[in-house]
Length: 152
Image 1: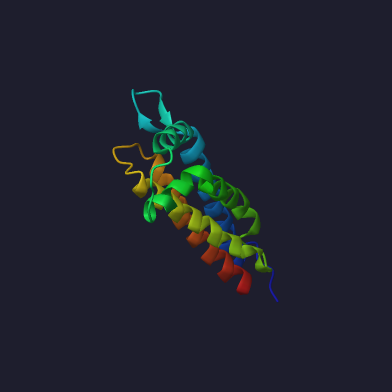
Image 2: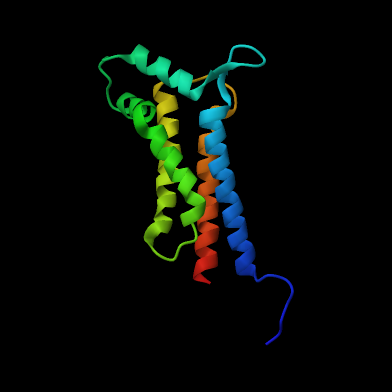
């Protein structure tokens, strides 16, 4: 048995998984709560929460069908599910028990955001709305790395 000063490959994979999931959490929080979605000027514009309030007020009780209804539910409560899943993601991604499956909820939250943006016909925006789907991709990669590292 030799003692090496360099970490094992598993440690590198696990570290990469943690870094990716923390980055996914940060992207989600920045995209939903900090950055402007619709810039009116160079500085200052409409954030997700401002757009959400306006969008739900405009929708009212209109007859939503299919994907429109699914997209509308994202603006009602789906963004909260997505936020919670991504905030918890770095803490559960490398668990040996079943908690690591919470990563799937984070990815579904990102997909739900895409459905919401599609149903609301959100176009001509900043990069902020794309941060949720990008975070979903990072979550999948981080989850796979964590599973490989934990199962080695």
